[in-house]
Image 1 (cartoon, rainbow, N blue to C red):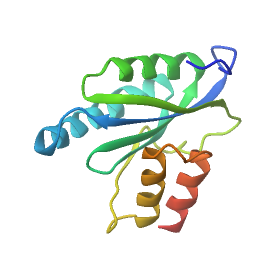
Image 2 (image 1 turned 90 degrees about the vertical axis):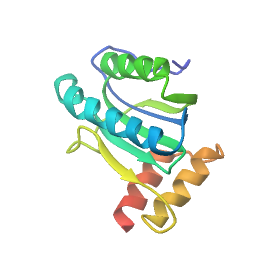
Image 3 (image 1 turned 45 degrees about the vertical axis):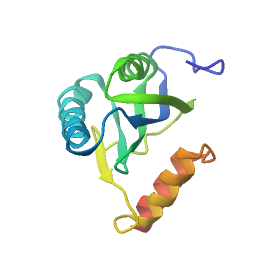
Length: 143
């Protein structure tokens, strides 16, 4: 992970990454559905919460849970051939969950739907978005 990795396998952490879809068009749309189905089936049993944003090409995901479970999930995502150019944006301990009510919330983002989030996505893809978790929460609150 990172050199400032949280300690303690049961510590609550928040991880944010971005990636590019490895395919395009309807194949990528089908892949997004499969990713969500798996998250909704598996995340509750592992104490994972979060949100997945997708703009048609790029993914931006916030994952919350215990250190061990979040590390395991991120390692699985890194091996997932549906993602390319995976980049860890943020990985920090947290006291509370931003997305406690969602095993994995999902939003398709574009300039017509959730324009505030489109701005966040565009900043994240350009690599200039920290503190991204707060920006996502503020954009969601504005929708």
